[in-house]
Length: 215
Image (cartoon, rainbow, N blue to C red; front, side):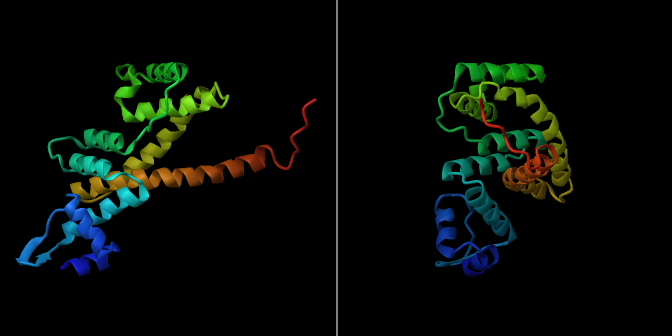
């Protein structure tokens, strides 16, 4: 297919496709003439993945490039690749870490048998968790870490559903694509469904009762 058809099938405008090509996020097509190139279904798959990473995940060009490099590494196990992809899409930002929050995360990791993660800044994922607990402490919620263990137990159910979804895909490339897109979209879906769960549990536990005034 030519670039116009690629744009039509992917929903990505031609100028954006050309930008992705210049940035190396999309492999070059096969030249059929000095000014024309042919693209195939692999380009379409990669284009949809890049779009998901940037538009759904909000990742920078550099982060997208890192994710794609991880995906294209052929000698890693799928388990290792999942961890590498999650590291690449977890961006902790520049929040200053509270030492007490770091201790909270380290204690949580030890309880879960993850002693090798003692330095939380070595992993984007654990750094992100420490940053969240630091933010909680900064607004007076010093015991938010008490939720970590029950959160993990609940999220293992979700993780099992995620892995079942990923494993049901056909080819290795389909599994990897589902791994990336499922994680990004799943984060948004979990956030929305959690709001629904809050509403249902609140209706059951709190109902229409009025919070009493202090004093």
